[in-house]
Length: 298
Image (cartoon, rainbow, N blue to C red; front, side):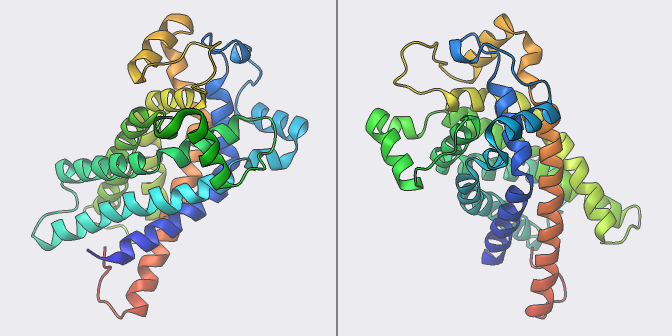
C-alpha cells in the first residue's frame, strides 16, 4: 500500500480546503437558515452566495469567512488523507491484479467505502467546523477546548452527532466524485487521444465536482443541520437522523430546501476539486521524477 497516496492526497486536500473555505462558509450559512425546528433560524437573512459573502464580511469582518478554518485544515489532514489514500492505494492494487481503473463497479464501491470510513473517524472535527462557520463571532477556543466543552455537555455521543448523515454524504461524494475524475481523465487520454495535461485535469475535475454536488447535496444539508444543533438545547426540535430531516424539511419548507446552498456548494466544490487534482497531479509528477519511476505510483 503506497504511503505516498496518503501523504500527497492529504496535502492536496488541505491546500484545496484553504483556497475555497469562504465559499464553504456561505454554503453553511444558507443551509441552516429558514428552519422551523429552531426559532433562532426561521428568518431568511441571506439571498444567495454573493449576498452571503458580502453580508458576512460587512457585518462580521472578512476574518469571519474563515471561522473554523483550523478545523477544516485538520479535517482534511485526516479525512482527506484517509479517503484519498484508501482510494488510490486500492486502485493501484486493482490495476496490479489486472483490473482497469475505468471499472466503475469497483471504483464507485472503493470511493464510497473510503469516504464512509474516513468521515466516521473525523466526525467531531467536521462538527466543530460547521458550528464555527455558522457562528456570528470568531471562535477563540482551541481545538482541545472545543472537544472538552462538547464532551462535558454530551459525552462521546455528542462528539459524534450527525455521524451517519456525514457518512452517507461522504460515501455519495466519494463514490461519485473520485471515480468520475478517474473515469473521465482515463477516457479522454485513452479513447479521445487527449494529452495528460492541465486541460484534461481541469475538465475532469470540473465534471467530477458537478456530479458530486448534485448527488450529495441533500445529505450535506441534513448533515449540516444535525451538526449545528446543540443536544443540551431543549427549546428546539431535534432531528432524529437523515430521513427525519428530509421528511420535516419537505413538509415545512418544501423538498427543494434539501438542495439549499447548491450553487455555493458547487462554486466551492469546483475550485476545491480543481485545486486538489491540479496539486495532486503535480505531486504525482514530482514523485515520478524524485523516485525515478517510469509511470505514476497511483
